Image (cartoon, rainbow, N blue to C red; front, side, top):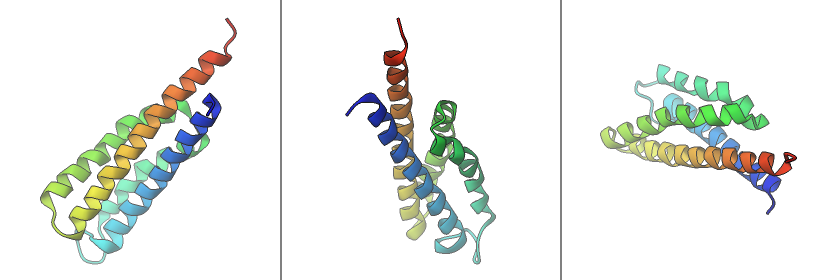
Length: 124
């Protein structure tokens, strides 16, 4: 796999993970296990994810760098809720943890692969 293919592969993995996390957070807080019956205002936690989604889908290097810091908040929420919640909510928190790890690793790999592609195409 050449450098450009690696960049594209990491971009697809990060974008798929982000879309899955947005979907998970939305259905979690509205239907599956909301904090209050009928849905929760906690669904607004998807707004920062929606804000970075265009940059992730476009392959913006700055967005990938920033997303590594943003995604840590979702990882932390997942850890806290996996520890404190029970039943379905705890299982959804574990899924959130897994998705955030995938996104974090894919974003870092994307930045590294992009850097190596840029350095190999830059004339000496």
